[in-house]
Image (tube, rainbow, N blue to C red; front, top):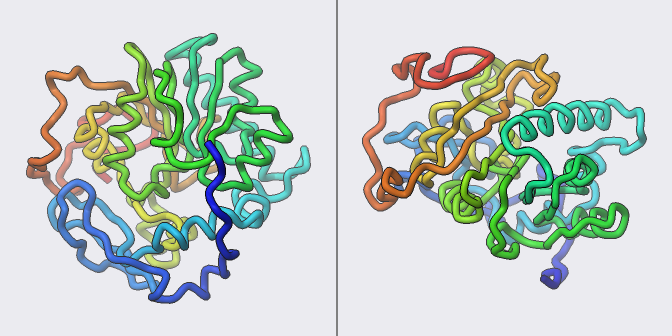
Length: 307
């Protein structure tokens, strides 16, 4: 897949203007959200029907492409200093070990593994070394270049829909779901890529975490220019179910290797629902607010599901 045409460099987050934004509605219910935090030119809103939190107005697709194409997005933020002993890279390696352990317990090599949002390819390279047959897809042209040229990985530039249609035994997307334009459509696409018996795995910040609830608009992971959907364990399960997937396990403990040091993020594993129980996306179910969902509704290792 050829790279997209070059676009102008992204401005710092504080320099985004209303001209760079567009309003959106809830991906599940199709209704506008109610304002929770105003972070000009963005708004953080909550769906009045299903309680999913999202950003509206948010950056347009062209503005997001400029943001992700900036080398500083990875070097200054996601990976920090890429030297072997940097704190950021030590954490990346710990997460990789923990997440690979979770995947091998569910689908062992030499399974086919597709990573969506593969960044510089660090997890993908580790999965390849562990024996998986790997392929990646990444929106950032900078990330694609590093993964291809420095690590020799098979990575496609673009969105998940741009990747080859070959079935995968594992589809993983670490810190990606909060970035995609439509998480319901994205998860439905993930389901369509899973081979029979396949599993999916993800990590994502969650807005019901203690830091998010205490800090509100000052939460360090809010980042409305790039994190455009904010989940709780319950709304993640809701969107997954609407897409024909079931979340089977959730890791929230910050001492677990897969989630080490992360007070406001979770790691989840799941699989496809049988075709006969996939809901009709055109008819959103009535759902109840997070606060009344009983804890037993979800298996976790680190707290109540209905926080």
